[in-house]
Image 1 (cartoon, helix red, strand yellow):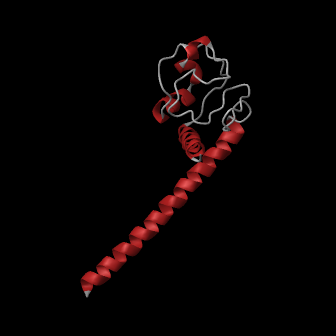
Image 2 (cartoon, rainbow, N blue to C red):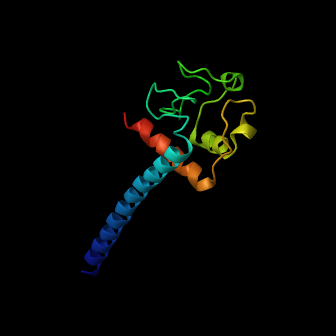
Image 3 (tube, one colour):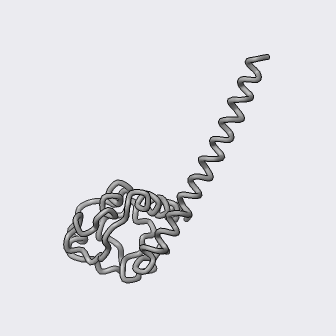
Length: 129
């Protein structure tokens, strides 16, 4: 009898924890969207093919740096030899000018939680397709 109660208790706790984690992920996405709207949307879009002063960030994770048809990148980005990953975006969003001096991006950077939130948001909008 004790074993059945223990299994039921663990199952309920696991379900509650999973639900809270799912809500946390949605919350992180929503927080990232707010940060993006406030800090990034003036120059960037998250819609495929919609360029502004900066390139569309739709599908940026997994894309080669400086490679997006229809957008004229700075020489430093065209010559860059890397693929955008969450880790590289994290370094870039901390201090874009330090990572890629000479890029066209005029932005001072984001703090740790904001970077994480924006990266999660960019991952989520690219996965919605």
